[in-house]
Image (cartoon, rainbow, N blue to C red; front, side, top):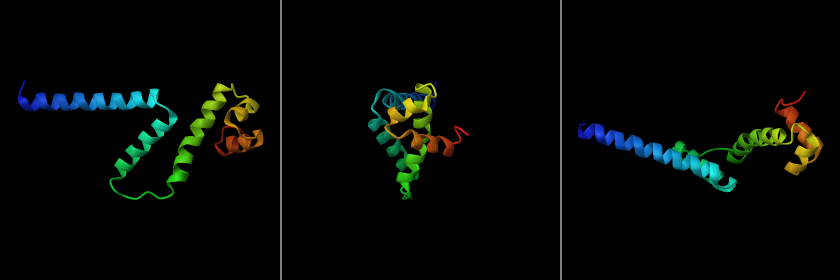
Length: 103
């Protein structure tokens, strides 16, 4: 094996270990830690560009999977899901309609 091939193999292995470590943090860390990591990666991807409406973007990205997952956990029981989320059932219904999760 040549030095160049060995070096490339080591870099690929290190990148895979880095990704695995990152995924483990997201899986085992707190929501706060996962959010921080995701935002740091987002800013890195922006490469110095300034984002607009970041708050709205984050809420939009997080709200749908949050509601879907809670609804699954509550076995589609809207009253229970609303209680878990800490919102009124009518607010939950509005959000479910807005995301086309109910008719």
